[in-house]
Amino acid sequence: MERAGKKITFAKDIKALFYYMRDSYIPWYRKAIVVAGLVYFIVPLDAIPDFAPIIGYLDDLGVITSLLKYLGKELVPYYKY
Image (cartoon, rainbow, N blue to C red; front, side):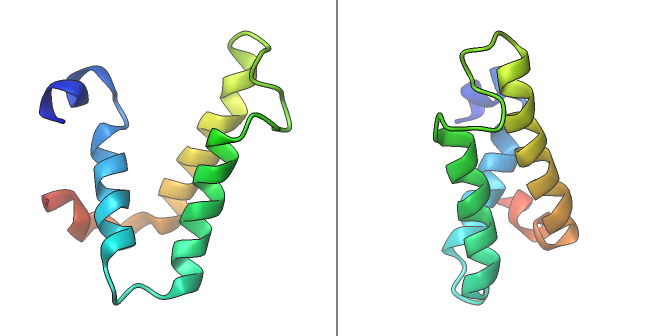
């Protein structure tokens, strides 16, 4: 993961989200927000289709960035893992 993290700028965020989702003290509705954001990122049916070069991935990037901003300080403790 460390080696891949140098190439993928979101690697630390993905790792923090992983530990956030595993925490049993996080309410289900907060986890549902994370799942919804990740499903939007993975599923090819988007507001802007992914087959459109560059522009197709901007909405996905926007959703993930918004998700990380929305969770904000809640994720901070999970970056230490």
